[in-house]
Image (cartoon, rainbow, N blue to C red; front, top):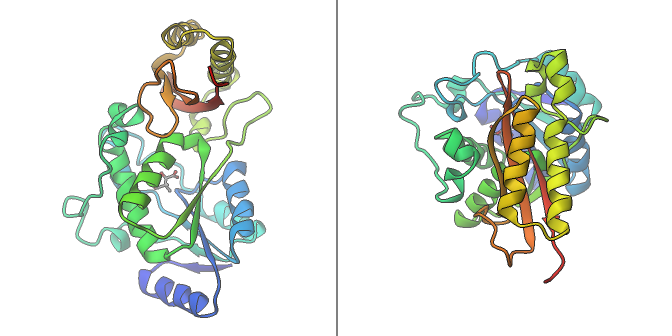
Length: 284
Ligand code: PAF
């Protein structure tokens, strides 16, 4: 696996692969890799012949009170995992390489509407930071396809809008969430949970499953959301949102909508967990 830290040699390496007719598949990450990331890299191999990963903890997507400094940086272990997963090229730029004029002077890419709901409402500016870094990385790596985990469902929908609106010729692939046997979605932030919190954390996934089952049985959406928020509160979470949404726009679902996603975010102690459930209701 080749490791590159500067943009110029990255462009040269990509150009060489493109001249050879290779299809470039890209997995952007912030590092601290777990089995969910490894699965993305393995899956990437099925979508092209050169697998490029990036590790960059993007300061632009963290709010002023968020965990940028505490975010785990585990480069040596990540490099081993990526090499074992047969990544071909790893891009690990510095903040100065990506934002040479500083964050305040950076052009911002902002996807309207969908970026402002759910996590966007709780974390103002977060999706502008994601859209900006993903645009920059796409311009550097010039991938034919890019893979993202479906755990960050709203993030992938924001990126789908971005790619369509800016006419980027990139195929986007969403990969199902990897889970612990308890049902807890794998996440770098699980490392912040105490043992006692970790034992309670699967309740988030259970609430989503129960909500999905109730919707399939015909329960109305508002009552499903209310019951789930109560269950989470009783289990010691502080719910942020639990919303039944139309799966593409992430607008609140209407009774006639069949193609749904339930998005959930809740605090457990100092850790904010997110998860979701995609759901197709039978035609009425
Ligand atoms: O999902 C992530 O790890 C990040 O938001 C991403 C897409 C790599 C952008 O920094």
